[in-house]
Image 1 (cartoon, rainbow, N blue to C red):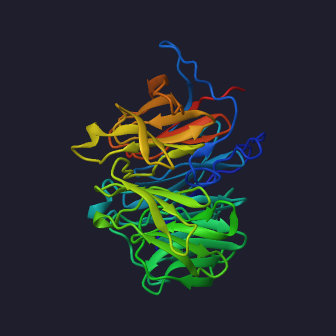
Image 2: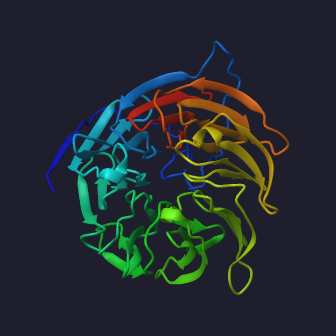
Length: 409
């Protein structure tokens, strides 16, 4: 594998990162798309918009931005290579960049990684759509170790490429290979050595996550459906089948403890899976909430998400508020396309598929818009924004990354 490696060190780092305010994984600290940081500004008039602190070109793709220790990390694609980029989170100054050869392939749209990196202290883990897995020194970009999910673990790449963000638990790094002889593997995060392998399901497009309130268990939403597994050895503890056309299960599950909410596109829809019995069973199933992309966010007893399908029908997509335990849609509103969203406090932060940013109250009683403005150009923008230390990071598929100041000083 031929590589080119550039890095810039010195006085580019900055201090003062708020404890617990980093966004180190896909969907933030808990992989649920939620930030509890206070101070999000929502009072934006027609002639007043958030300050655009910086803009950068990071290469094409759909990977989200992760942050930590005053740095922001992104992955893109250009000239036949994947590019892992580290920037000063506040100024956008380049810290380091790592490039490696990576095929685009016909099913990869404009190319680029789908998988968001995972930041664990001073190590950044990044998985390409082809299956190349790197552990970088997060400050310098030096490669500490590398593996390949197909070559080293007989993995099976899903149709649109590997997309999951690695899960870090203690000394373990857990990734989905899709191999018939170990679809889920745990690696020693220090050197990449295999700790255990389990299962035989093909991979889908969500990221492995921890169970809510159960530190010994994880969840994966693979091609077959929802599975719970032991973190210690990968043993599958339960499964709930949720098969879709093309094997696309991409939205992150929402773990409520006794129940898990899952949703997919392709006319499949959502289900609330009850885990209290001897075998998981659906409390309800519904086509009234179909999350094709990254999914939505929970606030209390309600779930807010984009319902719809990309392509010619994307203009019919709507933002919906769902009462979780009943499956009832309380309200819906169009105009966001197949956008994505996160939640900051009690505010939905929505990036439309046409590059507009909308702030909407997470209010189950009614749709309550707070502000809306354009932040990016382009189309088919399917990457959720990231929020950390009052700064919002938004990217489009063409590789334009913008940093906005939405929080108070």
